[in-house]
Amino acid sequence: MRVLEVASEAVPFAKTGGLADVVGALPEALTDLGCEVSLVIPAYREAFAKDPSIEPTGIEFEVPIGTRKQLARILRSRRPGSRADVYLVANEELYDRPTLYGGTRDYADNAERFILLSRAALELACRLDRSWDIVHCHDWQTGLVPAYQKLVYGSHPALAAARTVMTIHNMAYQGLFWHWDMLLTGLDWKHFTWEQMEFYGQLNLLKTGIVFADAISTVSPTYAREIQSSPGGCGLEGLLASRSDVLTGIVNGIDTVAWDPAADPHIPRPYRFEDVHAGKYAARVALAARLGHAAPDARPLVAFVGRLVEQKGVELVLEILGRMAGEGRAHFVILGTGSDEYELLLQRAAVTFPGTVDVVIGFDEGLAHLVQAAADITLVPSLFEPCGLTQLYAQRYGSIPVVRATGGLVDTVVDTNPDTLRDGTATGFLFDGFEAAGLARALDRAIHAHADKPLWNDLVRRAMRQDWSWQTSGRDYLRLFERTRMASCAR
Ligand code: ADP
Image 1 (cartoon, rainbow, N blue to C red):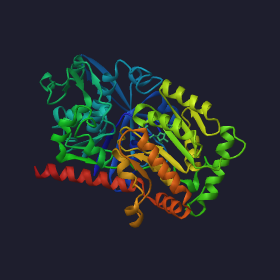
Image 2: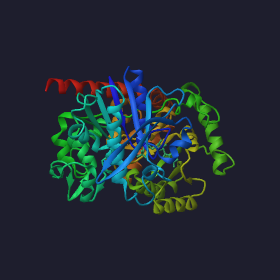
Image 3: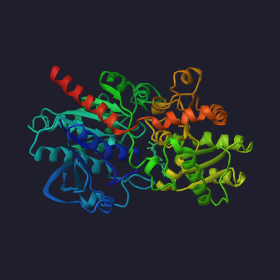
Image 4: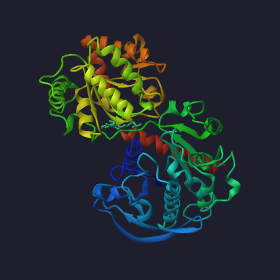
């Protein structure tokens, strides 16, 4: 199967979030399964620093954007070890910038930037001397790809038989632009209707992708259900429900090489389940030193690693810190960066409860590994969570997740109760409502369980043995691609 992946970011070239991890790993996983995969991403400034092997291909062409034409120069990565073909669309005016999407404000020309990516990807697909079975695009930045495939490139031999799959990584970001940007897409105004590209007077690129794609996926089965009603669908629930026959959820895999407690360069003593206690103790000694404590704490270590934004449930964490830190039954370590207000409130909590609450503000990949290795319990109390990776890393590192029952968290953590203990499936603790009391009760249950050594060992063993590899997720994507092709053949 020949698969063209189109996305706005991919590890190792450029990353702002989990999307980049997925787009970095999936092409390799699909290649392992026998697919021929090409990936197209923008040639951002940071890509050249991350991958010095990037070189010109000699392919270049102009892409119409409204009344202007933008030059797309196609580069290619020659990174050793990469088996998928990675192409980068270079255009200095649009992509040679300090950040991917803008700072506190999005770049004013983001519509133009991602129209170029979407159209250039298909234009390139037509020039690569092969025909494609699947065009797989991700999030609003590539929402125009299914529309261009159907309306502009549908009769080109390279793409005529291709089917498009749109994967939604987060419904909260839809790519909304003022209606005049419709002119830049080059598509007919007749598509600017509430049934296709328009959304309350604006151009909606994610909606466009959902409307025109042959199949839609999102990053967990539960999130696939949640987005078909309010508030999960963020206004597109009706449309998504109307396409439920082609909407599916596939849980993300994780990079099991980068996140491997048995071979992690960021932790002092790599470990497996058999020596998890020694490994965790060594990590706690190192973490204590890093946090400026003389010795590690004997209390259960409760961690939170994530963006400090409303989605991640920071509010609930702040509330339980006020209640539980005073009792002193656990040591809390929080690593994150995000809104100024949350950063300030967390830092205040650290001052109020010295030695019980430690807060590190910043993005520090190595420290995230050390914290997961040291932790007994990891909190993921999200308001909504399309898939979530933190709870997967936590399990692999033997830290038991306490999570809110939403989205991918439901699909990847099994609550500990008499039934799941009996059938041997428990891996964590879940709570329902988005309330601090619920989080506090679930954390309480976890702290109690931690005191019961045989029970805790059982949980840790099961959590560490879960398979979150890309092999499993890759197979699910391949099945989706096969289904999508079969469905259109049958039509
Ligand atoms: P999202 O993509 O919504 O931010 P995920 O759970 O899917 O949430 O992925 C977040 C990833 O980013 C995890 O790997 C987490 O460890 C990492 N991360 C988040 N904040 C930080 C931070 N401050 N320092 C290091 N890693 C972080």
